[in-house]
Length: 514
Image 1 (cartoon, rainbow, N blue to C red):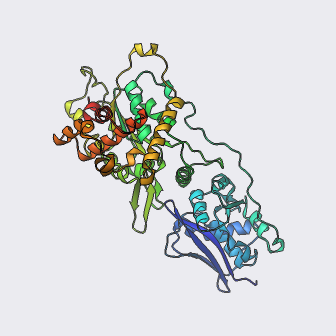
Image 2 (tube, rainbow, N blue to C red):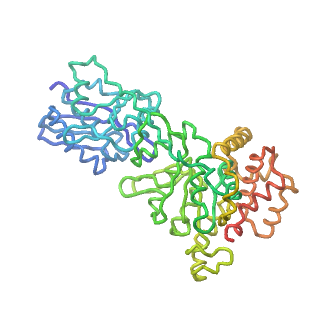
Image 3 (tube, rainbow, N blue to C red):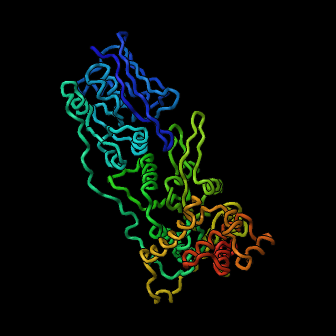
């Protein structure tokens, strides 16, 4: 055996951030032992057993000597089974089975089965993105992960179904043969919400306007009303009137899907904003992210650049609802562990739907309601205070009457989307130089001072509300942002008193609690 050292590359992930890892293997003439160093977790530390069995069944038994694999830099944690293929190639390079020079600059990702098969792993897309940023130009991934790996530009994606195939391509005797490039994947971009259209909603003109304003300015929305009036239908149709994602946003949302194990079946980006609707029994970890061992993104990160819909919001635990406050302001969630600090993006539009009381009958005079006053107060208190103050639009969705059936069918999502795109274009033109994209992201001081400050005649209503304590400063700023969205939707250069009045009415907590 001429070669005693083998080296290739892997990727260690912390959240969506990846770092290139040197996978080094050394074989020495000592008693047989196979160890992995460099802060591997339990799954990664079990790689020697999988690698030894996979190599043996593939026809390349490892030498009965001491094998040491180091994952460098050794100071950062290495998680999961995605280092199996890299470890196997580094050891086979040290054993002289493959030419170490050919594997040195290639990132290898994937898990090994005991039969030598190369199996898919989570997080391929963020790992390949990290490799591309580090200047790596060749990556080897499992066949089941080819589609998401091909979403990254500037990287040549290779794939092999088994370790035997991979070794034969790397074999010293066929050193001039290139690695096979993964073939094109059949395009199967998922058209989520394809059968959903805003025209399906019967009546509800005020709620439809609220939905359109939310799409225009990226505002949060609360809908309050009795069961069966269309709150869920409206929320599901918000993504149909949102602008398509940019390539950078789509890559980020796909990377989060890759971490959670959602299959990405096409090498073409799906630019539809995500729509995530967790059940009201969801735990805090499932909403915000976390978990023991591997820290995975939660619902608020899976809804990044899209919509997080909490149906029956009053049924969620108070602790879960209050946990949303910080991500709503910062656009990210930070999860702290003893040995690591993981950040996930979480810039989403929050849509809440709730009933007026636990039984849902406290509507109008509420004579059919069977809830006690204590139950009603407890239910209402879950959606009050600091969280509600961060909701820009709070609208009542009343019962639909039979007369609404005779009305003309409402506007389709395509028609509304054209208006939303025009309003978003006006915002981008106005805020581009300042680095803001939508009205909801504009700092309050920029609207209260300087050239964008509205005249007193336009803000008289909310000025009085602020002086009387009926509006907080945060609520004042959010009202101004919503007024700018109303003006953009109407094609006006700046908000008028009518725009401010509409915004104040739509964010009034009293209206949603009626």
